[in-house]
Length: 102
Ligand SMILES: [Zn+2]
Image: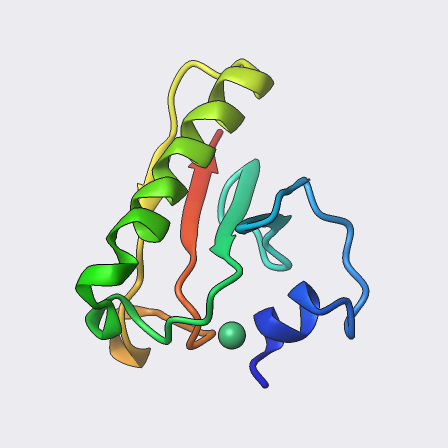
């Protein structure tokens, strides 16, 4: 089981910023900005390249979670980023949207 699936299954303790039946949001352990959160689908999809057509809604929903977070924390701007594969900077092989803001 990957580390995010372990967090989702509560086998590894975490303090989620947000959680619902399909998504969990946690703070990045090694933040690259003042605010650096990871928006993670509970469904295990290894990389964006492993997405199938049935994953479209679940992946699209990551952006809606990010939108709602941005409204909640009242920032003036933010960046959203997917890293893909090891050479693209992906450290955990379970897709996650980086939410960055200063
Ligand atoms: Zn996983």
